[in-house]
Amino acid sequence: MSFIPGFEPLSEPSGPALWFIFNEQKLLIVNRDGHEDLPQTSDLKTPSLMTMYQQYIGSLNGKPCYAAEVNGTDPIPAAFVFRGIRSLFGRFEDEAVLVAGLANQLIVWNRNHRYCGKCGHPTENKKDERARVCLDCGLVNYPRLSPAVIMAVLKGEQILLARSQRMPAKFYSVLAGFVEPGETLEQCVQREVREETGIEVDHIRYFGSQPWPFPDSLMVAFIADYAGGTITIDGSEILDAGWFSAGSLPAIPPKISIARRLIDWFMETKG
Ligand SMILES: [Zn+2]
Image 1: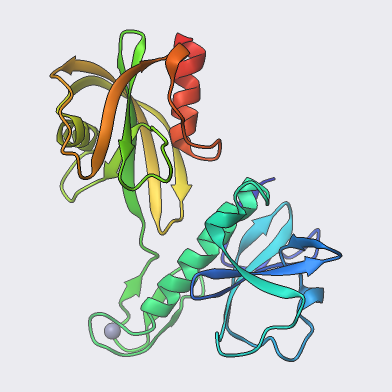
Image 2: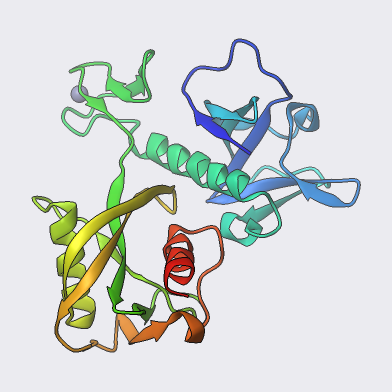
């Protein structure tokens, strides 16, 4: 599966359009012959499904993708049901779930930027790029992205993993945190590891990145080496942390996240 973001519909789509329709962050799913799927245009030809807002967001395997919002008080036809996006991981293609996250992100962004933050006048979608422009003062707003770092900290043949209060179940994962204004990505790596575990790191090198639209992150992943300190946790944000070898890992996050890619890389190189 391959998603190509865009703000103008494809001139020659290679398949039927896919619709990511939301109400209150829940995605509309159609039950087609006993299995749940994303609605296509042909599923939506029903007068009781009126979208309040719709926007082209890109293409998935050549199929045009639209984000739309419906009024929660309107009845939905019997074949449809609303689902939380994250509940679709493992049931739908991973990339389709990430596109659903992006669709939700753009709908929320549009809704929150209908008026100019500078002068208060209405805004509209800009014609030549994904942005909203003020009809009065011309101020342009782009979708917000919140950069975050995520890092595998290595000490010899061991990796630093922690169980966070945010994490579901009993997963242990690599540390992560949001970048603050005025900070480089490398400084953020050092600060987050220090704040969450009391450990100092150096030799910070880039690993990869992943858009993570829950709600608007760009995860930038690094590998770093232990440079000093002993593990000290606050017990509120981080519940437990430790050094683990490839042969004795605790429960780790599912395949879709870049956190898991970092841990898989560790297992391949140190296992
Ligand atoms: Zn304005």
